[in-house]
Length: 375
Image (cartoon, rainbow, N blue to C red; front, top):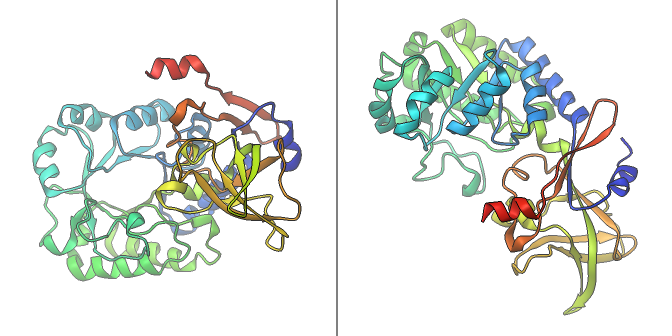
C-alpha cells in the first residue's frame, strides 16, 4: 500500500485507516502458531470491536473474548453459533448474568465472591476462575494486572484447592510483551501450586498481552503448550487483541496551525489525544510515519482541544510542517477508536478500511446529529 498516496487522497481528516492486509497477516501468523502448538485462539474484541475486524478474526480463529454483555451480544451476532465466546471481567452484573451465561461458552469468575453469588444461576457455560499469580512483569503499574491490590483475579496464594465445579483457570499477566519468559514463570508457579489437580481441569486460558506475530522464536511457546496438553490433558486458549490489530491502524491528521511558544515550534493538528486517549492516559508519544530521527527541525505536535496536556509529543523533521500538511500516527489500531471521544465538540475521526485489493472504503462517518443525539 502506498500510504503517502492514501493519506493525501482522503477527502477529510482526521481519519482512522485500518489495513485488512496487516490484520490478515497477523491472523495467519496466529493460525501457524495454533497449528504448531494445538492451542485455540480467541480475538479479544475490547481492542477494536469493528465489524470488519470481527468477521476476519472469526474466519481465522476459534472464537471471541469479551468483557461485557454488549460485547457478548456482538460476539454472538458475528459468530452466529460457531466458535467459543469467553468472558472474564470484574464487572459482571447479576441482572445480566442469566443472558451472559446463555451467550458465553466459557465464564471465568474474577473473584471468589463473584463466583459464589453468580454460578448458581449459570445454565450452560463452562465455569472457570481468573487467578492472579502476583507476578509483575510490566514496568508501569497502570499496565500491570498483577499490581499490588489488583482487582483482576483471585490471588493464587489464597486458593488452596481448585473447586470441583470449576472446569478451567484463566490468567493474564503481561502487556505488549515480546518474549515468553513471563508465561514460563507463571506456568511453573501454577504447577507448584496445584500439581496433579490440574488434571481435573478441562481448559486453561493464558490470556492476552503477548504480541504473538512479532515474536520471532515461537519454539518456547510451542514446547510449553504441547507439554501442558500432554501432561494434564488440557485445552489451551490464548486471547490476543493488540497483537492482531495494533500495527494495522493509522490516524491521519492535518496541520491547522503553526506558531512559536517559548522558543518551541508548536504544530496544531485537527485531531487530539481524545481520539487516542492512551496518549494522555499513559503519557506516551505514538509513532509518527513522517518523523525523521536526524531531522533538523524539532516540533511539538499538539491536538486542537483546550486541554493543556493535549500533546502527542516532540518530533523531528527534515522540513518543518506547514498548514495543510498531513501527518500519520501509526500502530494505533488497538485501544484508540474504541476509546475515542468528542471532547470539546470536535467530531470523531472518519473510519476507512483497506481491503485485500488495497481498495479504500469509508465505513463510518459521524456528524452533528450523532453529537446532538449523545446529549
